[in-house]
Length: 350
Image 1 (cartoon, rainbow, N blue to C red):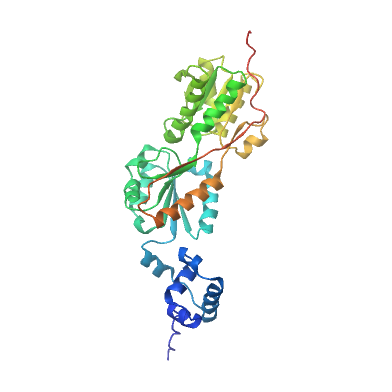
Image 2: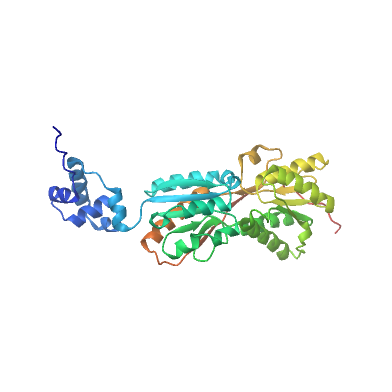
């Protein structure tokens, strides 16, 4: 004969045992903004009663009550982007735990796969969506509609569709400073190796910073000094430099959209008999471990994944509490690390 199941302890049972109101128990156990107004002895009494009675929270019930779960999606589109932003993904995982969220990471092969993933899920009830999607296709996806309906959608790359908040590195400022650094060293023939086709959103910001630095120094911004490549890393820099130097053998400075490309540029230059930084100065972006141990050690920008993650998750919490709040753009200034790959430009008469 089956025994009767032990009745589940409820909030009312905890309230009765702690001799407080039901709302007080709810505030304390859910640790919401009202809990701060309750005295420390009362909070301790509530927690002690809950432990004594064996009370277990009901996350599904809480989610139904407030209209959304504590699940957060990190959507990354393309494995190249997942590789280059692995530190950001790990930082977001830690920040999600700190904010009481459960994180689901999904890497889509391409734009179509990302669309399919989004359309297969009931995203209105998720706690928030963080996105690494460096493609114009993001603007045509369901994400702007979800943001308009109150779902926190945070773009971790620049130039997001209207209505979607942004938390990302200030790439334009970084490339302005990196280019200005080489100008200050005396370089005037400065090129940019980039990818405007596949990584359009981030590359456009970097290109804008490069052009700003040239304009501020009174130098012409000639697009013939911009080498556009489709390979993501070392190969892109290696092939890009060879094509670039065929057009401009007098190039003395190159700034690249990531560290792997910068190392490819240095390797190709060395194969052509040019030494870095004696004959060519090179700046990267990302502060990858390889650049710290390469010879010469790479001048670059250190990303701030922990700051990006923390501010993005804080924005998810804020927008859940205030769904109609105006969307925000938070650009994070990155640290410029000057190492051995940049040096004085060629001497000039006078």
